[in-house]
Length: 393
Ligand code: ADP
Image 1 (cartoon, rainbow, N blue to C red):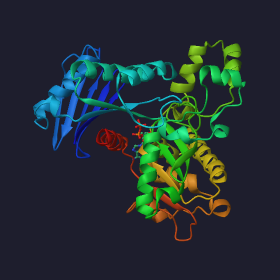
Image 2 (image 1 turned 90 degrees about the vertical axis):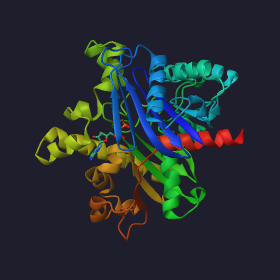
Image 3 (image 1 turned 180 degrees about the vertical axis):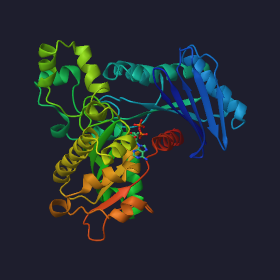
Image 4 (image 1 turned 90 degrees about the horizontal axis):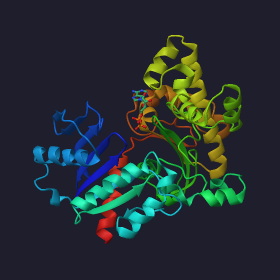
C-alpha cells in the first residue's frame, strides 16, 4: 500500500512516502509564501533541492508531487492509496483516527478553535487534496487521540464546571502518536502484551511530555489544554503558577500577547540559559557555565517529579521509556533523571549501557523497573493507523 503522511504547518509542509509501511522518501517544503522558499526531497542516497518560489499551500503540495514524480518513486499521483494527516487537535470527540468525509470535515472545522495555530493549516491541506484528487482516501490521525482515555478526575482542571464545559477546557495532552508508538515498541522489546504493562513514557524533543500508560491506555499526561503545560521544554516554560501572568501584566507592563510569547517562545531551556539545544547546554555545563548547569538541573528535576507522580498514579511501573531528540541522544539527561530513584522506586540505570546504548535497555541488573531508550517514529505510526482504517473500509 502506498501512503503519504503529511504534516502541514503555517510555513512548511513535511511529507513522508511509505510503501508497505517502509519509508522511501521524505519531502519538505519550507518558507511557503516567502521569497526564500526551499523544497527538498531525500530518497535512497539522493538529496535534491528546488528553490522555486512557493506562493501558497496549494503550490507546496504541487511541489511535493512534482518532486515525488521526478524521483520516479511514484509514476502517477492516483497510485497513492491514502493520505494520512497529522492533526494536532482532535478535541473531545476524536479518540481514533478518522476517515475524512464531508461530515467529518465539518466536525474538524468546528474544533479548529482549540488549536488555531495548527489545525487550520492541517485542514487546508485536506481540502486542497479533496478538491484536486477526490478519489484518494484521506485519514486524520490526532496528537490528542491517545489521551482520550484519561479519566475525568485527571483530565479536568479545578475551574468552575460551567467554564470548563462552555469552552471544553480540559487536559487534552499531545504527542499521543509518539507515546503510543513507543509503548507498543516497549511491549515487543519486553516480550509482554501491551495490556499487561504499566509504563512512563518520556517524549523529550523540542516540545516535551511525560505520559502514564496503564495496560496500554494513557491515564495521565503532562501537556494539558495546550502544549505549554508540564515539563520544561526548549522554549516553553511548562508548569508555572498561573498568577505569574497577572503579576507580569501588572508589574512589567506586559500585554497578554507579550506573556504568551514569553511563555511559549522565550522560556524553558532558552529562557534559563539562552539555548534550547541540549548538546550545547551539556557542553557548556561541563565547561562550568552555571546557567547551563541550572537549566540541566531544572529540566531533569521536573521530569523526575513527573516520574514520581506517575509512579503513584500507576501503582506499579514496568518501564520508563526515553524517546525523541533529547531522550534518544542525551545520556547525561537520562542519567540525571534516573539518579536517586533507586531507593524510592527501584529505578537504577546502568551507566555503561546508558553511555554506549548497544540495545534498548539501559537498566542495571538490580533495577526493579526496566529503563528503555526507543527511537520514536510518529510518521510510521500514522502510516500504520491510516492503512488500518483503509483496510477496514
Ligand atoms: P522536535 O520536537 O522538533 O521533533 P526533536 O525530537 O528532534 O525535536 O528533538 C530536538 C532536541 O533534541 C533538541 O533540543 C536537540 O538539542 C536534542 N538533541 C538532538 N541530538 C542530540 C544529542 N546528540 N545530544 C543531546 N541532545 C540532542
